[in-house]
Every structure is written in C-alpha cells, then in structure tokens.
Image 1 (tube, rainbow, N blue to C red):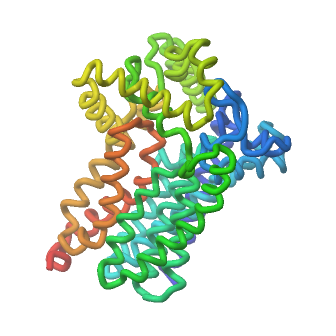
Image 2: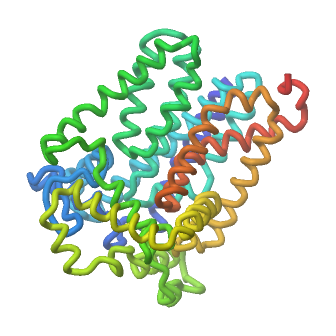
Image 3: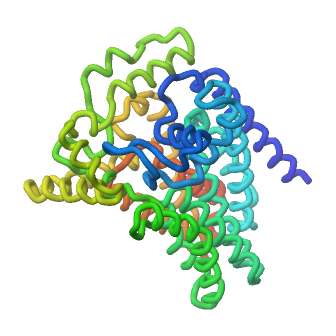
Length: 430
C-alpha cells in the first residue's frame, strides 16, 4: 500500500508539473508551432486525407508516421483547427501521458529489479521531474507519445517473459507496432525485445514479430496504393539523410545563423517571454531546405512521386559526401556528440536549464550503469542495446534534441540503479 501511494503521488506530480509548464510557458499560443503534424491534421478534417505539401508537391503523404497527426486531428476536431484551445487540449493530454510514463517507468523498475524497490521510485521521480521530459509536453511533436510507447513496450515484454503465455507477447508486439507507427526509428527496439526473450522463448519472439507486423501492415498497404511502391511506414528517409549530410549541413536539419542571438532575450521578464524568445530563435534558424533548395529544385521534384523525391535527395547527399570523403565520419562524430550531450544547432538547447539537466542525467546514468553490478546490467542489457542502436542510427543519419527523449526513461532507471546499488553492491554482483 505504501509503494502504491508513492506511485500515485509521483504520477500526480508528473501530470501537475507538466500542466504547470503548459500554462506558464503558453506554447499553445506560439504561431507556427505545429509543423507537418498540424497541416496533416487539418487536411484530414478537411476531407483531403492524410496529405501535406512536401518538397514541391501537395498530396497524399507518408512523410510522417500516422499515429501522432491523427491524435492532433482529434484535438483539432474538438477545439478547432490550429486554435490555441485545440493545442492546449493536446498539450494537457501530453501532460497526462507524462503521468502514464512515470507509472510505466516505476513498473519497469519493479519487474526488472524487484529486490530493489527503491530503484523504481527513484527512476519514477526522475521521469516525473526531468526538465526535457517536462518541456516536451509543451510541444506539438511526436516525442512524448513515442517515449511512452517505447517504455510501455519493454514493460509488457518483461511481463510477457515472466508469465510465458501467448497473450503477453501479442500485446507486446501490438505496442511495438504502434511505436513504429509513431516513430519508425524506434522499431529498433525489436532486437532488444528478441534478445530479452532469448532462445528458450522463440515462440514468444515469433508472436511479438507477428503482432507488430499485423499492426503496421494496414498502413504499409495504404502506402502501396498511394505511392504505387513499397514504403515501410515513412517515405522520408532519403530526405532526412540529405538534411543531415548535404554540403551545407552541420549534421542536423537546422541552419546555424548568427542572427538568432538577437532573438534570445538576455533577461526575460517571465518564463513565457523566455519561451517565446526560444521559439523566435528556432524559427529564425530555419531548416537546411531554406538555404539549399532552389525554386528549380522544387520544380524538378514536383514532377516526381514522393518516394522518388526522397531518393533524389539521397543521391544528392551521397554525391556531396563522395566529393569530400572525410566529411562523413566527422559529421557522424559530431552527431554522436550532439546526441549524447546537446544539439548545438538548436537555439533551445542553449538554455542552461537544458544543458545542466542533460549533463546531470547522462553522468548519473553512466555512473549508475557502472555501479549497479553485473546482475542488474544483464537485466538492463536489452534496453542498453536499443539505446546504442538508436544512438548509432542518429549519429549515422541526422540528429535532433527530440530524438534523445525516448531513451531518457531508461537512463533514469540506470541512474536509480547506481544510487541504490552503491550501499550494498555485494548483493547484485553474483
């Protein structure tokens, strides 16, 4: 009962802190904050289907995975298309997701390390209060939902492994499919899940794979009819690779401009003003597209199918890299640094709050991994595998601050494991 009380308290704290951030920062009143998600949602409600204007042409799209734009469309249907009321409703919903995330993190801690119940509560507290996870709730972006789904997939995988029945792996596979339909890169969780099941549970691994495949199959079939070729969830990999690797890129999708300094308020009168200045600086930075693509480029791409536009940009990026072979490894190392610490091309990550919290969690997670002992490291191994795969993928292609959010619940667990392990290491080193 006492543990349940602490869980309830941490869930409520997580929700209230995020709602407070939404109300104080008032990001729902910031113009141009919904990006492609908002445009797709508006088109859905206008009867245009899942469509967007992308790279010179407008029409049915697979530029984004489907789950989050549909969620945005739900908020628009209730509060009005693109209105502050609708965005406020969406962000309050994301605050509730934050509470659910804390419950999932606590559940993960309990199922993986039942002999150390404090790990679960400490990790839950970190997930409830870590600034980047809180701040994510104030954005119209996929990260909050993706983070919740990835952590939930691992929670249900551990429960499925413990019960060893068919229902658990099927539910786990369904969650993996939803995760991929929210952010396809997080499909990299599959090797970790299969490793967790091990050779003795090949049937469970098969059920997970089957359920995940059936979950994403309708969207892939839809893509085939829309694009007349096989598109696995999103069509934009080549486009993203071009953004991160063309000759003008710094390894991300953003432009480094000296002019953004004039948009950052040195001594803001309120948190709302501080947040607005960050948004203004972010809009001033813009995208690589703004400086690298000409009207002729857009005209050329407008005659292509959406997947072909992405392939065309991929070939462009590869040609740039072949012209300067040493540049790609430098970009990869830079992106790895950006991923582990912070994206230096993003004006928002200049905030001392962001940098201090990110550095603190990173140090705590690494220290925790080293301190927790061999037994716990083996149990957390599948999550570490997925974390490494996600880091390597983004280091190789393109990186952004939001890509780091899904692994932060895992980092919270490792940090908590080190904190609890330190007093009595002999119990977990066997």
